[in-house]
Amino acid sequence: MAKEILLTQKGLEKLEAELEELKSVKRKEVSEKIKVALSFGDLSENSEYDEAKNEQAIVEARIADIEAMLKRVKVIDESELSNENIHIGSKVELRVTNPATGTSQIVNYKIVGSNEADPLEGSISDESAVGKALLNHKTGDVVEIEVPAGTMKYEVLAISK
Image (cartoon, rainbow, N blue to C red; front, top):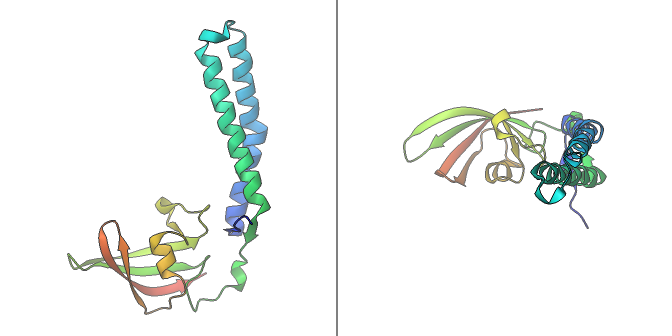
């Protein structure tokens, strides 16, 4: 059976909006590009046509991916989540210490399903090394996690919704 896709309500709305944009706007734009490219004649040497057809394939594949995901979505009811332990939907404040250098910094993350992850926005996947290691820990716990930069210590300072 296909794996369940965990999303917050915000993540679901973002995915639905992307699907709507692809179906109502992108499809028409690509279709128009194909029509214009066809008007240039000889398809054997028509790079505009090839490019438009490739773009069409990418758009259609993404539409199919999103539609398949939406069939397996489980929306996390964030109002039912506790602040006792870290789980998908938790916002966490962490002190990250690099034992090699002794330096530390405070970071804030939101643990989300893999389809919502956006590290630049502070959303990390429950399937990432850090996200997976933090799950089910409580405030005050110190977790050592192997990351590309080496083993780091993550102290859980706060958990919120």
